[in-house]
Image (tube, rainbow, N blue to C red; front, side):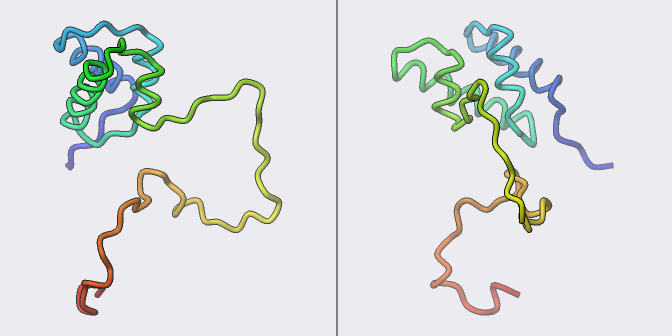
Length: 117
């Protein structure tokens, strides 16, 4: 049985534990925001905590929701604004999962045709 990624409740508890171990305070709103981040392992959570701690130290700012949103690229929720999906939306939702989108593609020109098979 393969090891599964931690669920949201476990991610929140792990973030709270590693933030406390790093000597950082964490409020419930911050833990909820961090718990929404998709991670595949505990190592990613440790990396995020280290990244946020370094950013807070370098910027001389407290570790808060504003820093998390700017550092991790979390979208800021807009109160009262709703989006209406297009009428002829033909996208397949299986391909629009943000956890599966390839954001950084290596140099394709340097590859040979056998690499794509």
